[in-house]
Image (spheres, rainbow, N blue to C red):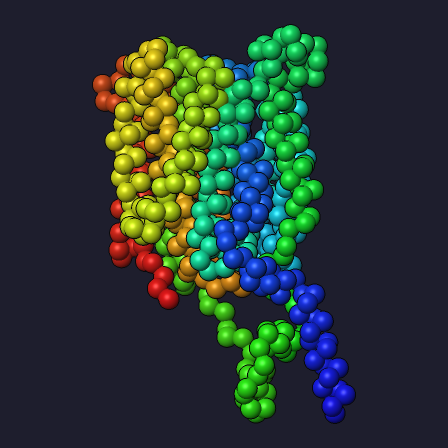
Length: 485
């Protein structure tokens, strides 16, 4: 019996030293200071999957025009909305599936597959020769990339408790930066044969496919990240089998002073039954609110780019793709400063619910000012537009980060993948309607420039504010409930 007991102890020790979940436990124990390496890893993974989501918006207006599918200039926004929505429709169909896969097989496989998907289908989107190819490649990019839900769970599991909020903030910040840098790259690098004729000739591949260069740049970055992601640690405690070994490997850390009877009872108690996620109102209320603000932001992103590049006679700014890229680059820099220096302090001081509420309230008068900003010219226009764009993006990322924190606090670790899958499915559905709805409303508003009530773009931003006001009302009790431990 003594030999068998000794053999069992050795087996347990070997298992503890080699199981993926326990390796992460030891990684957490080694986190004495700020875990810079882990934060950077999460940052670049999220950035690689966020960049292609909105990189098309600065040049989408011109891409649809070049496809010659719109009969009138006012109809371009209508078709642009469908291309912008196709990625999110794809994500709607598969987000829950990827969440379940992440809970069963681990976060890392879903992360790797998602980044490889960006490499393949974002490149093909840049080579689109017609409207339907653009729709198809964006749809596949969304349906095969289920990374965002699992990476949020991964960010909380990779760190010790005092750094978990920072992990979630890193995800939302990288996501927000990606949604800004992506369009900036799209604006700067689209149509290179026209902007840089000394480097790119019209007979080259970049001349024949004027929107390929920004997609290629993002795909090359994603390729490097996909190779590096093979060295990411797995955070899910995938112990593949005996639950007794799971419990035993934890008990190996400290000598047991309990009686044999108590130890035996502890082994066979088993896990508590999982809670039904749909009935978890703190989780569901934060997901619903997240969906409302996601719809609002996606519609805004579509409308902002269309509004900026549309002609002055239709209430736009007559900006080029490069001008839009400059505005979004400045917004990204401002967002980085805010998220790293101010947001953590605001969350500790006010709490995530109040931060989300304030962000929603302040965005309403801000968006109301956009039609009046279009009346400015020169330096005053650039200054006002850059300030407004920075403020709008700061508010949205603050809201989303706060809701991320509420969602992850509402569930246990073994349900976070599924919970984030539900959030991604619902959010993607709302975001899918955002570009389509925004593009349709924008096209309709451009045809009513002489209306007596809210003419032209005034109507567009009024409708956005109605959606924002609904979101603000939903941040109050009894709708939004914060989980209490």
